[in-house]
Length: 314
Image 1 (cartoon, rainbow, N blue to C red):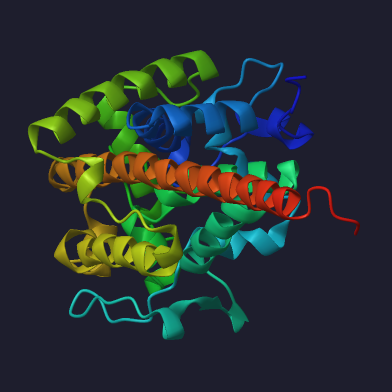
Image 2: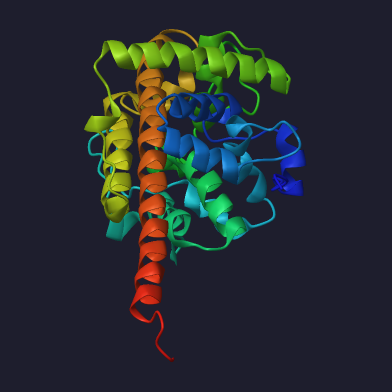
């Protein structure tokens, strides 16, 4: 019976959420879905089936909701590169995959959730792993989720389109740039947000196609999950030195970022969200294929055992 519901915490989905913002995460999810194989579509549809008309974009925001009840999952949303921007940007897994001495980061989370999605026999665990992955593959493409400086930009207080109240650089990259680019107002309801995300996903898909970006060129080996995730984090982190923090903290705090800075950020955001969706689709395709191969192998092994002992007394 298809009543595997999202947990009651998803009722809190309408609360404000960070990390690319709901718009960014929904867009990544819708874009990723465009790259699904039939096998991946069936895999995700079955896992995420529910009676509340929630779709894959709702699953994409679940990780931000559940971390309020499970604070230990909070540090899974980032990796704190201990580098020296804007002069030097680099991600080092051994050095950076911890928060205040506690092991764990977005790279290890993607690695662990990939293994659970493929190997767990517990449907709830497998479902949560997939929902975490849908979210984390979005997060790892947000440059400030790969940077330790000023707590990933949270401590850099800025102005955006003359709004200086409680505005910080991290929030500008999570939400403000995206909303302004798409033309979506703050406080838009779920329906408006989903429509905007779906439209943007269509545009990004066409952009990816025009640039010759395909799943065949992506890192798709689940056995190399750590390597793949670290590659994505490193790519996003390069933008910290190339653009995000290139002018220094003082400049960022003294200038309105809704003007020239916004104009320069838009193509970067489009590139990273476009890649996040493509890579999400590629990754879930690989997981679905690995899961299918594993199930087939188990079934074949069982059949071989049965044939071997057919008619014999055990």
